[in-house]
Length: 290
Image 1 (cartoon, rainbow, N blue to C red):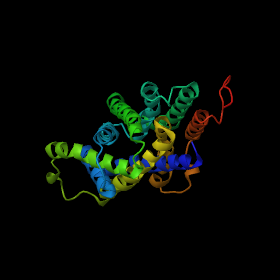
Image 2 (tube, one colour):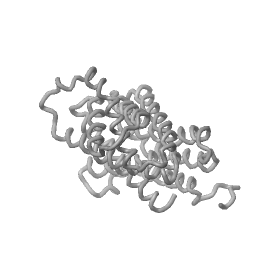
Image 3 (cartoon, helix red, strand yellow):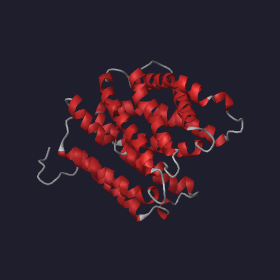
Image 4 (cartoon, one colour):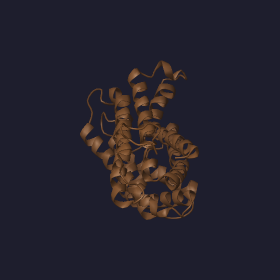
């Protein structure tokens, strides 16, 4: 991965890290189905180009709906969701082993991903698993979303010749098309109260433009240059931003170092080590130099 790719990866993690904040804000007065529909529709209007049916379903409609249904379970929130979502690279490296000849499973890949997942768990576990919650149901929803993301990432490799903007736009138009019928049949948006808070509308716009429209241009750019496994590493970095957003925006302070716990710092270090092993900046015992 080049320095430009790493910059894209960190920027992508920042934008998608915001999505969990936007979810919590929008859920105050909207249903999961309405949020997914609004997110995809706004992103489609933002990008406006072509249609890709499979990517829209597997990389947007299905995982967005699964994650939101997971987070809507009583006691299951963004912290838990980000932990289960961090399994995307593990699913991706297994699927890529069978379908992508240039992305074979290696010991550094598996070790780095597992180390990163351990870091996510250490960083988020105290807040995520405190108290009672629908862990089994919510976790199953998000694991299903992680599998869907992994399949979509491998599938998208066949579109290497298409520009990231076109892929991102087509995906959002497709995802919106998948959701039109169920949102009108099940959610009946014409019955919504006019009292939906401005905060929820702003969160929905942020999800559509920042965390979907711009984010997926970056996603396909990284996929094009670094492959399905490398782009899936964004799910290991997303919880870092989730922690920072909680320590600043939610706490009303910029002094994040005063609110981040020792376990969260340790988790971030483990994630960094995992990424270093994956990129071969740190070699495992017995591993030959490249």
